[in-house]
Length: 85
Image 1: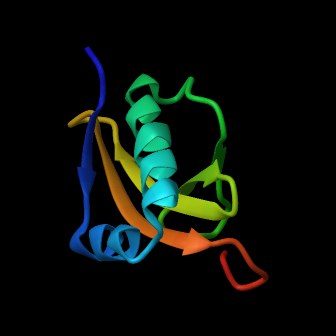
Image 2 (image 1 turned 120 degrees about the vertical axis):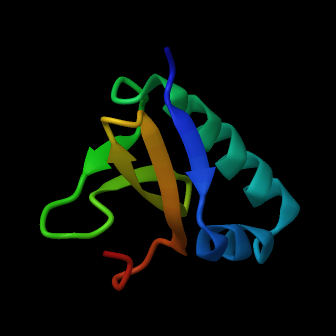
């Protein structure tokens, strides 16, 4: 059984502010998270909430994982810069 993916309101708003091509890239990459934890580009962050990030070109998708419910919650999408983490 795969992992379910849900988007927070905040992450949805952040996604909609991006250009359409970037939106498509991010949605495609997030769709591959159903194979978590074996999906590529995932890194566990130390001392950070949410604890995981997915790299998609110049953007970072920050998410958490609930193992008991098999649920990934996309919490934020940020453009990579020195203040991202």
